[in-house]
Length: 68
Image 1: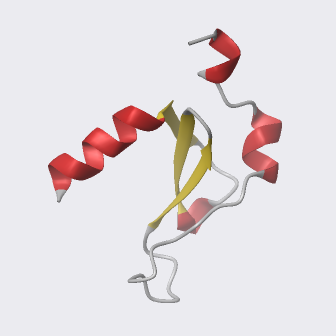
Image 2: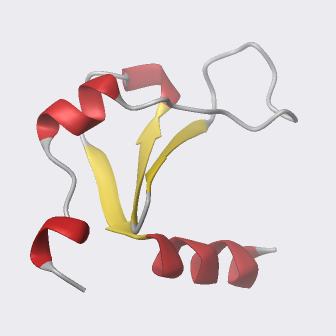
């Protein structure tokens, strides 16, 4: 995988389509996810302008499968 396929720029994060779980209430007490191909980002919905954890999509899928 090329380096540019494994990264997400700050601009990508600003323009990304962030999603919350449909099981989440309207209160900002959850995480949001943005996905751009091979890379995913996770952020705290209470601090949308704060930092985001950016990782390969496969790593996020593995994390979610383990937590479930």
